[in-house]
Structure formats: C-alpha cells, structure tokens
Length: 387
Ligand code: FEO
Image 1: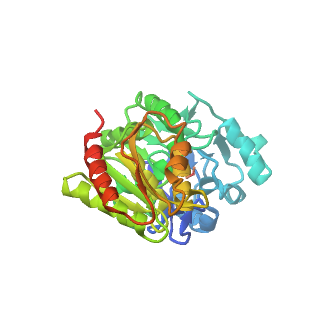
Image 2: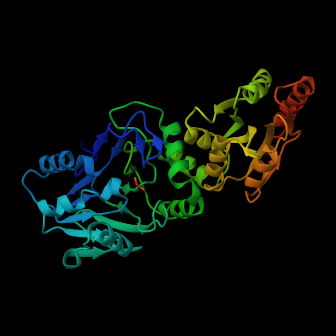
C-alpha cells in the first residue's frame, strides 16, 4: 500500500489473538503497522508481532524489489512492534538499528543484544537523513513506554506516531474509529494524560498532513479532529454530555434499580448508557466513564466489600487517573450494605469528583422509598451537568 510517493505500508492484520495485550477484547482483530521509506537510503519503520514475522518479511521483500534496507527504526520496543527485529537482522545483517538509548537497553533484555556495532541512538531533536527525506525525532516518554520516540518526515509532512493515534481493529475490518480509538487510548495510555498532552504540544510545531500510527488506519484527513480528541482525552475533560450507569448485580435487584434510573434519565432526554460489569466488556465501560461527564455506580455488597466486578471497574478507573466527573452511587445489601462506603473509599484520591445525592441504599430489593430516591437522583443527575 502506498502512503505517499516514497512511503509504503508493509504491516499485517491479526485475526488470531482474541485479547490484545492479554486483556483487551479485539473482536475486529488488530493491525501491527510497519512502513518503508524508499529514498537514496531505505528506512524500515518498526517490525510486527512475532506471529506475523514471515508475512511481514514477505511484504518487505516485495516492497524492496531486490534492494537492501539501510536503517531499521524502532519507535517502540513493546513486542507487538519489535518482536520481529532479530529475524529482520538475520535477513538484512548490515542494517543500522535506530532507536532511543532506553530502547537499546530493552533490546538487550528482550533479545540478548543491543547491536553495539551497528546502531544509531536518537533523542529529542536527532535527525536521520535518507536523501530527500529527513526524519526528525521527538521523545514521547510513557506514550506508552519510556523508550518511545516519534519521527516526523518534513518532505511528505508525515508523523510516525508510534502507539499514539492508534486503535483496536484490523485494517480489513470496518468499525467506528472514535469508539475503538477511545477504548484503545483509555486502556493503553489513559494513565499518562500529562505525557500525551506534552507530546501534543511538541507535535503542534510540525505541519503534519498524514499520521502513520503503529495500529489502525493511516490518518490523512480531518487531522484537527483527531488532535482535538487526543487533547480532550489527555486532559481528562469529558468528551460528551451524558450519564454512564455501571452496575454489578448478584441476583438482579441492583440491576433493576440501575435500569429504573436509566429509564428515568432517558425519558427526560438525557443520553444514558448502561453496563453490566459482570458481562459487558469492562474496558468499554471504563472508556465510557471517561467519555461522559456523569457516572452512576450501582453495586451489591459482597463479603463486606463491593461485588468484585465493580472493584475491577473502579480499579480500572483510578489507575487511569479518573477525575473531573459527577458521580452518584447506589448500593444494595441484605443485612449490612457496605458498597457505597467501599466505592467512596476507592475514589477518595480521584481529583475533582462531585458526589450527586442521594446515595440510594437498597435492602435486597427496591421498595417505594428507593423508587422515590431514584426519581430524585435522576433529577439531580440532570442538574449536575458540568459548566
Ligand atoms: Fe502497540 Fe505499546 O504497543
């Protein structure tokens, strides 16, 4: 696939692995992207997952048409991008490996070699001239590992953005870019909003026309929209006005209360999405909580704690720096309701959360008082719109 006159796509689609990074569901697969710049000197940009080495090397061979690469640029050492490095070097042993100093240390840890005799260490501001094309490097610490660098080709105005601007889903599948990019972003780099924001500031200095990420499609239109989404996500600002209801229910009584609240909110015209944390994709629920400005947590009490799916969900939020939202709670407990106390404790260190009352306390099944409280909570949630 041709990206520009001199830049080619040689990546692969993964439809084998149902879980990316061992935890994220990828029903539409995953792409591991790799690119080649054909110039006086030839640069290969990143490799692919170990299960696709042969396919990738074939793509490369077809693109090279008998020529040999001069450089292999490793933007990111995570194995979904670097695992085919040694196989590449066996095929093309004279290639110079280009990466950050930290990446070479990781190379030694992963592969037992850091290519001392044929390497080029790059840092912020380093340049690699290929002829017409020159790659300028930017460091991108923690987006999403500490060794990451991005590169910008000023000839074709292309940003090679590593994990940034990636998404779940193989390139031969159609899906909604925003929802799968959001789930990917929040899941993979949601914790590192400050670092992503810094990177966006640096990227802003370049006249980028095309973004080539390591996952998902090449972006060459409406780049301002993608940058806007990334700025929103990186700053933890809500992307949409609406309510997420996340519930964890043992026998269905907490679920019933959650669904009653959902119905009341929707009847009032408030956009509301609801997740069963025991059955739905937990990472989609986490991404939704970052997307909307209001969140309702509804959980049964279990062993004097919250029901475990809620604990997993809340941990997923706090480890990604959940903040700047209005939050309400509903708890259920047949003899000693504890869920609201535990949920509040888990969110104690989260910044700028506003509690919306009342906290609904159910003893086994909803009664008339609970229904009235849910009515009131619905009204208060609608008033709790930020700004
Ligand atoms: Fe796609 Fe952080 O690796």
